[in-house]
Image (cartoon, rainbow, N blue to C red; front, side, top):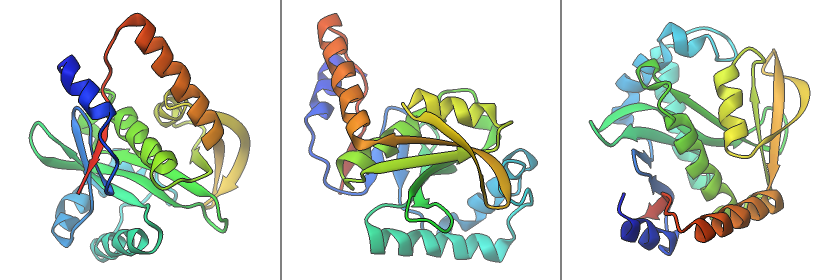
Length: 209
């Protein structure tokens, strides 16, 4: 990304609930996404990290897309479809929901295996976190993962979340991470100051109508 483009994106006002990053588009799910989402959720390397460790049935996949849409309508935050810009394929999801039986806001993400190891989960989660704190004005965001899911835990740490405790959610033992808006803002200021001093540009996700 050219430096002038990166600087322009820094000042673009957040105006909607879709996001574009250097490699990804985070957009709303539509009913037409059901087939690809079902394929992603049915892959053994995907569902082994889900709470029930089983592929999601077709009808539940369709119902889940509807629930994503309804959540956005009610709360102004929710789960995005992740589209890889290079080939315009749906490759996973990323976004927010309420942590089971709580009022806490949980961030989650899942990518099809072919796209693992490229930093794309971190790119998506970082953009989602920015939306959560700067647009939706959430005060605190949490994340959970099975202890053995090292890749997911690394994403949490890369986006600034801190391990808080071991916990039990969705009938699984999990590790529990969290980040407050105050801590996020302090870290954002530190990074921007360090970037300015080094005279470097960095990609800023932007939101569009």
